[in-house]
Length: 133
Image (cartoon, rainbow, N blue to C red; front, side, top):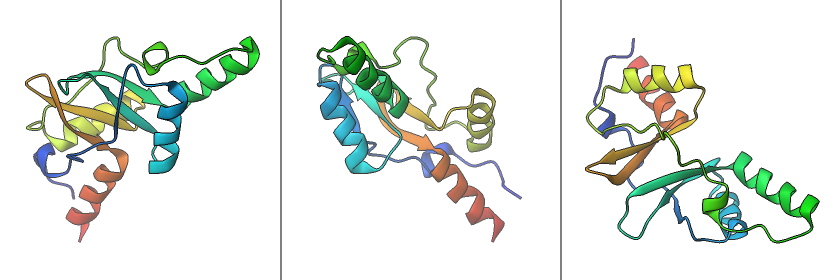
């Protein structure tokens, strides 16, 4: 049985990041190269400003094909309103339940406004596996 544990012990402390002003095709390549389903978007000070998913990138690519034009920047496609974030001292069980309820595969972890990590389904599964044995 999984016990309540501090989220800080399981976060990815250096998640893959892009800038809002990056070209969307460059951000797509980052996602492909790192074999991940999305990235955190930060400003020059390391503040979280958005999240860009594979689906956002697909939307951008299809838009470029249908509109026969350029695709633009990450900020044109990223999710930036009402971002749900976690704090590193939150309970991992509470975060996991909320991620399931909201059907989200990743959650940025922010402390004092700065992105300090990310928790994903993979880290959550790893935590469950550790407590099972």
